Amino acid sequence: MKIKNICCIGAGYVGGPTMAVIAHKCPDIKVTIVDLNAQRIADWNDENTDNLPVYEPGLDEIVKSARGKNLFFSTDVEKAIDEAEMIFISVNTPTKTYGLGKGMAADLKYIELCARQIAAVAKNDKIVVEKSTLPVRTAEAIKNILDNTGNGVEFQILSNPEFLAEGTAIDDLLAPDRVLIGGDTDAKGQEAIEALVDVYANWIAKDKILTTNVWSSELSKLTANAFLAQRVSSINAMSELCEKTGADVNEVARAIGMDSRIGPKFLKSSVGFGGSCFQKDILNLVYIAKSYGLNEVADYWEQVIIMNDHQKRRFAANIVKTLYNTVSGKKIAFLGWAFKKDTNDTRESAAIYVADDLLFEQANIAVYDPKVEEQTIFRDLDYLATRTPDENRESVTVVNNPYEACKDAHAIAILTEWDEFKNYDWDKIYANMKKPAFVFDGRNVLDAEEMRSKGFVFTAIGK
Ligand code: NAD
Ligand code: UGA
Image: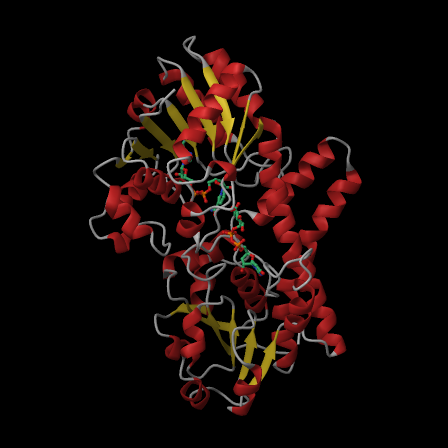
C-alpha cells in the first residue's frame, strides 16, 4: 500500500518537527498536522518562522520548504483524519495528576480521545501509528476502542516511537540512529509495517529501519529513556563523591567513556536532568513494573529519579550554605531556564526546582534565558503552587539581558549550558556584582581556573 495522505494529531515538539521532516523528504505525500490548540496552529502557520511554537535549529528552513506545498497545519481534525490513509497520534501523555496511579502512571486520556475521534470519523481502512510514548500494551486498548466504536472499517495499529532529542531534533530526524516500527505479526500487520517502512525509506537506509512486534516497540521506547536517564543519574551520583574526594567528574567521565563498552556520550554531570520525558517515562515504567508485582524492578528504576531529585536539591542547598547560610533578600542571577541548550522547552527543567528551593529561602531571583519567554517562566513557577502568583512575581524578575540579570547579584547560578554563556565579558560581570562574587556552574560550562583568576568564588559540579 502506497501512502499518499498522512494526518498527525498533535502539533507539539514531536508532531511538528517529525511531520515537517516527513513532508520535506516525501514531496509526494500530503502531510496535515492537526491540533485542538488554535493558537499553536496559528503559530505554525505564521509567515515569520521566528514565531514557530517550537524552537529547534534548522526547523524553520524545513518548514519553509514544505509548508503550503505538501505540509499543512490545521485545526480541522475530522477532515484530516477522513482524508488520511495513515494517522499518527502524537499527543501528550503526561504523568497522571489524579486518581489511580496519580504521580506515576501515564495519563492516556488524550490518546483515548484521539482513538475515539478516529473511530467516529473513519469511513475507510486506516493505519494508526502510535508516535507518542506509551505504556507497553497501549496498542491493545487503542485497537479495542477502534474495533468497538468504529464504523466497521479495519484498523492496523503500529508503534513507531520517536527518539529525537530536543535541540538536535532536525539532525536526529534527518539521520536517526534507527527508526523503530512495531506491528502485528500477521500478514495485514506486516503490510502496514511495510507501508510505514516505505515512508521512511525515502531518506533512511533500510538497515536502520528496525521492525518488531508491537509490545517490543512500545517497551523499547521506555527502556531507551530509562537507560539514558540512568547514565545521567549515575554520573551525577559520582559527582557528589568527586566533590568529597578531590576527583574531577569530567576526568572520571573521560576515563570511563574511553572504554568502548561504556562509550563517551551522555556522561555530562549536571544540576540534574529535566525535560518532559525522562521522569515521566521512568515513573511510568515503575508503575507498570509494580502493576505486575515486580517490586525489585520498580525500585531499581525509581532510584534514577530519586538521585535526580537529590542532585537538584543539593545544588540549591549548596548555594545557601556557601552564601553564609542565608540568601534571604539576596539577588541570585539565573543564567538559563530551559532544560537544555538550543530549545525553548522548560518542562521539568532543573531551574524550576532550584528556583523553588531558593524562593523558600526568601531569595530574589533574576532570570535570563536566550529563548525562554517571561510568561513561560512564571507559568512554570505558578504551576508548582508552592506560593501565590503574586508572590512569585514579587521575588522573581525576568530580564532579556544577561548583564542586567547579574548586576548587583550576590551569586550567579548557571542552569542551562547555552554556548553564549562562555563568551560573556566576565570581567564586566564581576565588576558589577556584590563581593565576594559567587558563581555556581550547574553545567560545567565555564573554565574554573579562569573564573577564579578573575576573582570569582567559583563552584562547579563534581570538582
Ligand atoms: P506537546 O505537549 O508539545 O504536544 C502535544 C500536542 O497535542 C499539544 O499541542 C496538544 O494541544 C495536542 N493534543 C492533545 N490532545 C489532542 C487531541 N485530542 N486532538 C488534537 N490535538 C491534541 O507534546 P510533545 O513533547 O510533542 O510529546 C508528544 C508525545 O511524544 C509524548 O508522548 C512524549 O512522551 C513523546 N516524545 C516527546 C519527545 C520530546 O522531545 N518532546 C521525544 C520523543 C517522544
Ligand atoms: C530525551 C532522549 O535523549 C531522546 O532520545 C528521547 O526521544 C526524548 O528524551 C523523549 O522521549 O522525550 P531530551 O529530553 O529532548 O531527549 O534531551 P536529552 O538530550 O536527552 O537531555 C535530557 C536531560 O538530560 C537534559 O536536561 C540534559 O541537560 C540532561 N543531560 C543529558 C545531562 O545532564 N547530561 C548528559 O550527559 C546528557
